[in-house]
Image (cartoon, rainbow, N blue to C red; front, side, top):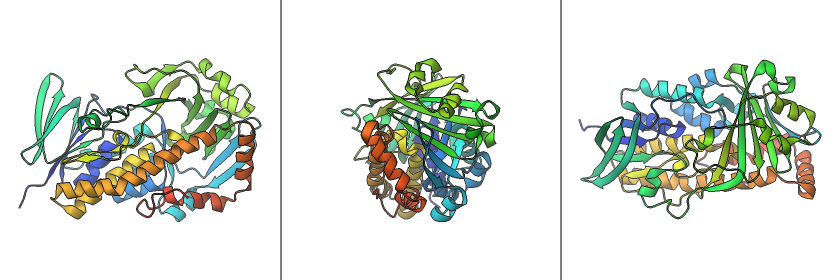
Length: 406
């Protein structure tokens, strides 16, 4: 019997771990390199719509994820200045019935824990922490990978290499991409906080996702950790950034710096913001999605290929979609690695680009002011829940059916 193909993955985030599972389920042996010394319990809340949870179900990890997450009953959209409801989009059982799997919210660390445990239980997967891929060469019908783990230099031979190493992907540049389209600051900052539920206002404790729309800012909140915490994300516009920070997504920030953006908001929103004492600021960078994700034996995945602004809450979901498509491609093409990677790229490039561009447009809609905001609110107020759900079918339904927003 032939030896199974060996795939190496650079990056142990949501996309890398899910890709490890997908490739192992497709019959490959996998070595994953994660540069952090451990799979850290950092980050904040994530929303996983049905397009992500359907992939997790196919990989056999949806049940543990569901035990750690929550399924909000609705998305409630409110106007910032007076708290008036603009729309209520039913989720919960309706979302599961319409799109096949639940729409859930979960702490990023809980999702990572479920994925790490699933990978650790898979004999075909080797997880290496504290290990950084330094470079590679396509040679001798495979990929020779140079890595460093502590003081040890490693050389690993694999049949394929997957770059899941994030926004500032080293592998993206090594395959000839990313040199002319470096990440550009978007002009927006995400402020993130986790609040004990008992300290949050009553309205924020409900099993729902709250979205507030204001001029040049918006606010999102929902419960995580089985209702023990409320995840809050406030996104503002301004001139602050920190290009040289080692962890752009985890910079401590005083809440007072964001307060002026919400000074004229409804008391409910201001009360929720005031309930948080420890804010992390995350400067949001934008980068055009790559039109080509592969060279022979090497492919990009997740933010390395298509980083996106968070206005559709699809960053993690699209990485999970990538992983599922990668596994599917190897199931179909077996040992023909070039064909598998080409099929993966073909299945994902247009879809991911559509999500990136739609997310950009959504950010502009969220932050409208003046007459444009009035028109937006009127349109949302007149749209039925059924029509709003239908507008999300392209995104939350089967990603193989259509890559275009309607």
